Amino acid sequence: MYKSTYEALKEGQGTWLKTNFHTHAGICIEGQCGIHPLDDVVEAYKKAGCKVLAISNHNRYIPQAKEYDNISILDAVEYSANPHMLLIGVREFHDVPHQEAIDRAVAAGGFVILCHPNWQYNGYFPNSLIDSLKGYTGIEIFNGECWNDKGSGLALDTWDHVLSQGKRTWGFGNDDFHYYHHTNLAYNMIYAKSGRYEDIKEAVSNGCFYVSTGVALKEYALEGEELFVKGGYFQETYVNCFEYKFTGVQGRVLYKTEGDSARFRIPDGEPYVRVEVTADYGAKMYLQPVFLGNNL
Image (cartoon, rainbow, N blue to C red; front, side):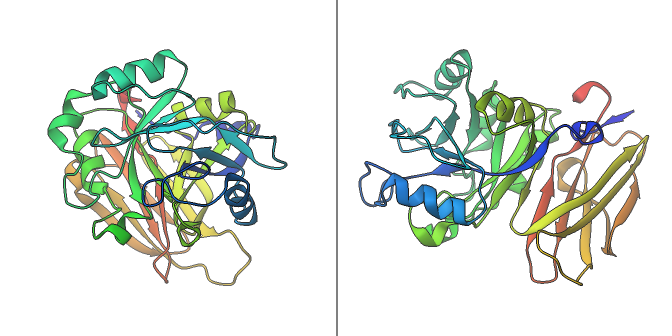
């Protein structure tokens, strides 16, 4: 029996919230955290339709100076003892080994995202270290800023490496905002009861979100071994043709097709299947995997 992370959609008691967890702003050092004032950065994200924003400066917490309308600001710190991690829902940085930093964040009620595994070079966050860690929630599979640093912001190879070991690990997409041209490069669409941290954490923990660079999820269903996905756009358009790719263990492509939707019967015994949807102009949507048996 396969299990989906999107069961909450059937209940219809949530709403889709556009979210960026990797944002540098406020009292920063140029070249390290960006230089733009917090208020201005928040306004830029509000204009981009963002409903939840984490301010995650390097090794420091920037307090929220005021309440903002129509957007939730989450506490966060980017742990920057190489390789980097996002500590979401916490206000403290401790210069300790990675596993201890994860343990402290989780004990404080936060969750952890491993940052840009292929930043600057392939394996910046090496698989050997990832394999030794536990307690983190997911991995940045798409980081919009990394290509500016001569590296790759894509880390599907790392994600498949971890998933193939049977680890329930979610994929995240973030801007890694330092400057205004980094806005709206990638985001997480989270199905949550509200933008309050507790509701965001619950939805994220359950994997009830997807990564987008412009493609929206319109329909989703898992019935037994049959998976149905329909992509679309966030704006009204007549365009309705997408590429659908279903990927299994070790990144093996199981099925690929084009159309307005896709239906796929999962092969017997496949440990997980994840779906990637691509628009005609290259925009993407990455869904969280469905897992076999008790892996979810």
